[in-house]
Amino acid sequence: MRSSRNLIIAVAAAVILGGGGLIALGMADDDPGVLPSALTGGRPSPTGPSPEELARIERAKRAKLLDTALKQVAVETPDFSVAVLDKKTGQAYAYEGSTKFDTASIVKAQILACELLKAQDADREPTKSELALAKPMIQLSDNNATTELFQHLGGQSAITKCNKRLGLTQTTVNKAWGLTRTTASDQVKLLAKFVDAKGPLDKGSRTTAFELMNTVDEAQDWGVPAAAKPGETTTVKNGWDTRSADNGLWAVNTIGRITSPDGKVDVSVAVLSHNNQTMDTGIALVEKVAKLTREHLKY
Image (cartoon, rainbow, N blue to C red):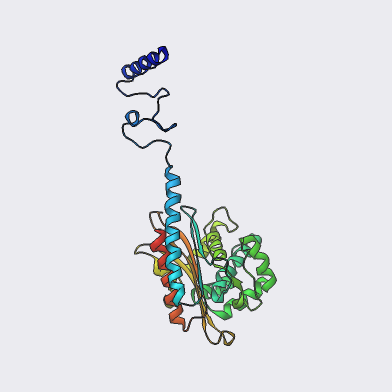
């Protein structure tokens, strides 16, 4: 009885000294660790989820909805995969992200990164002759320029070695560069390296890569840019190819980045596909998938 009177007196004193704001002194409702609602002014208990935890829960919910949407697409379309890496939130999403596809011309972004690293290693800027190959390779997807630059860098073995510096663990380089095999998850890693201030590419190299991938020919400005909103900035490298080995069906791929002026959007996206009936149906597929990632992940 004495301890109860002492507690009442202590609480009363706290009310007076605290200017009317009750200070909890070991008092609790039936749920230990949760303050009585009278002592919290009706506010949620501080033991609930943190804002960070709530954000993670929301991102997981969005990813699940995207999974469902992509599975519905997959019922009626050729094989495809997609990966998204949000630089702002750190969220990484992938659907069939480890499934390997032929790169076709998206490998040209990888070759560009290796060329820029070679120049860095020699403590110099890319030469005029190197840029004379790199520009049409990226902006026009010129195959002859790509083959010449690929050989200039040392071919299959040199690009394979370069992959390790770029963190590409799921990409297998082919001496016929367009038949290089890769995954969507590896491709968003590559895209992230193009903007990572702590990565292997220095500021000059990152700027060069951006300038080239931001100025592709208008006829090739499809794929990832279809998911961008007005006023946002995009980079892109697309790949498309048809082979008799695939019964004339098309591989159509797109990789690129979307950023907004206010910094709220900063994502890398890769969509890979094969067995498309035509190039146009392949483009429609990869653009649809890219748009679905934005719709559901809310970036």
